Length: 193
Image (cartoon, rainbow, N blue to C red):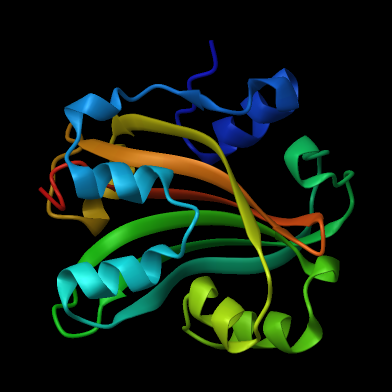
């Protein structure tokens, strides 16, 4: 059984189990409210959903972002070791409340992105979903997994203890029929109740 604990595990587990393991879910959706289920299962842009639900604009707070050469194959992205990627960790934060609503880990394949999109993604604090909309980039999202895990070190970004739980999902984004990014998003289970 594939149980993803964090983004690094997601990469290793998905690689080792190959694509036949996609679609594993370790959360009983009947335990969640409607909005939590929507956040885990939607193939839409979470930023706009959060803005509508919360009644405030959402911005990106970058924790880390860097261009590097991937040291291993990542099967879900169809990339080989040595390919140039962006690895980034961000928070989606309310512009008025300064509340962190969501944490995300991303692996982005640089040479599969349109030049202007890529440059603005690196230079700006705009959420990816808003950039897709701005550049009218057609995308398809494939949910790989959704799961629950203790907040641990991520608790420092939210008003919660390390033992409180996060609801999480990992998905691939395709553009022009190629996988361009893999994203794991996490938010406190106590949010949106």
